[in-house]
Image (cartoon, rainbow, N blue to C red; front, top):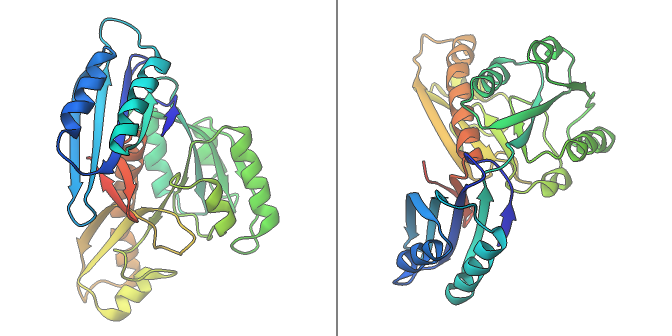
Length: 293
């Protein structure tokens, strides 16, 4: 169970995410509990993992007539949770969540996120951009977002990561987006933000994990290339997959052609994953991401 004051739409709205052992009556009891505390269900999506016998649900709730009392809602939900052995969390509609974007030299994913956030398509505040190269500082300046150049001699460099983590803590960051950040974060870094780091990998995982995936794809002569947005874990490119996309290629395409084609897929896939995370549409269950899209 957790309570988080993150953004949905307004202070009188919230998203409730639950998971528990599957049994009859869960949906009815959850709806009744929310009704008892004055909530009105705007939207509900559910999934039952038959193999694991687990029930998962996302409920978007509003309080149209009165401002809810969070502690009253918490108490009612906890009573239900105790009965159903339920894990749950609620995200209230207050201030937008604060996002940090990590980049290297590639700018296509960064540009897309900044434009979507500026236009209101991503309900968040991009608070800072951190890069191991100075190349994209002008992009940050154009959007009036603080840019921090921190050299990273090699992946997992303790000194560099200490500086990065200090910035994240100082800015109360809720989500880290690796927008073609060409360094691998250490397990200790990732442990600080479990389920809060989204990476875009330029291949259709689990194929071609690691470095130079387009080169690997070219050498194998594949006919489809893709991109994968996933949560970062200690195991490289193996975290729960949130979204994927593909595009067709042929023997006529060079590595350069594949990179060019792949960029469009990368930006689209990453934006979807970030949006779904911010809208509390993703639940990590049994090592997989269940997406209520």
